[in-house]
Image (cartoon, rainbow, N blue to C red; front, side, top):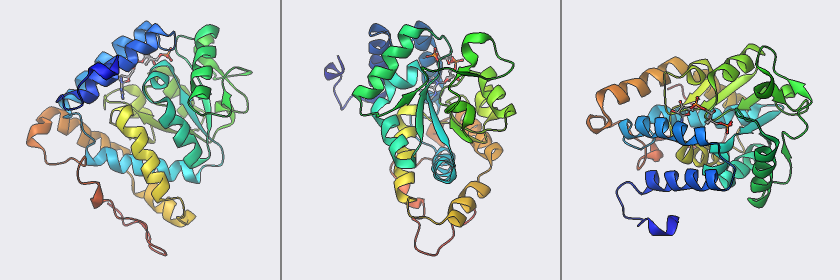
Length: 272
Ligand code: PTJ
């Protein structure tokens, strides 16, 4: 179906995203609520100019540094994420040496199995989430199910397009949360240590690129990047872009990622 979208269409990426979500629903990977979630996301993305703003790029770099510094990082995958960026999530897990765990809001065993198979078809060796032998406290039953050696034991969790309740519950457990959410006002984005206000289809490849750039960085360099990142400033900048309109903003990085200073040996990432 995606072959039908001409690549020079001005809204190619957006249409491609819709088709991937539709295909996800058709194949039983994505929930029907996932369609609504996508629509909500699209509206914010439209207002952001469907591009990665510089605060989102800084957040992506901080996320890469945080994941590379983690002892037990876990990347959570739901039905929308599996439909939109399966290969990219596998690549990210590889780049930062993290586990992948399927964790669903509308959990059914059938959908769980399909997503695990889908991720394996896209190159994943091991996918957690089927054991579900631990619970996140203070959450209603199905949403609380996690693997004891996965999200339950993780120090850093990457939770794209997350439900606000669960994001709060994970933060209350002391986990460092990295969230991707196009709505800077969502509870998930507000709860996250590192909120990335960007479309998941741009955010994940961007984190991978930063992780590759940082793979030889010293622990001190990684810490300097995470320490200098301020979630509230990033959220404010995203909200300003949405309120003011991206067309009046020159604050974009789509064609100007080169402003991000590359790590050179012995250098410490400068504070923003
Ligand atoms: O597969 P499941 O059962 O785990 O369900 C997943 C969804 C996403 C359906 C579920 O978690 C849900 O209902 O989420 P919400 O509460 O609708 O929140 C989704 C958030 O993700 C919203 O704030 C959207 O703006 C945002 N969002 C939607 N699409 C994208 C997005 N953010 C980044 N990239 C997107 N493509």
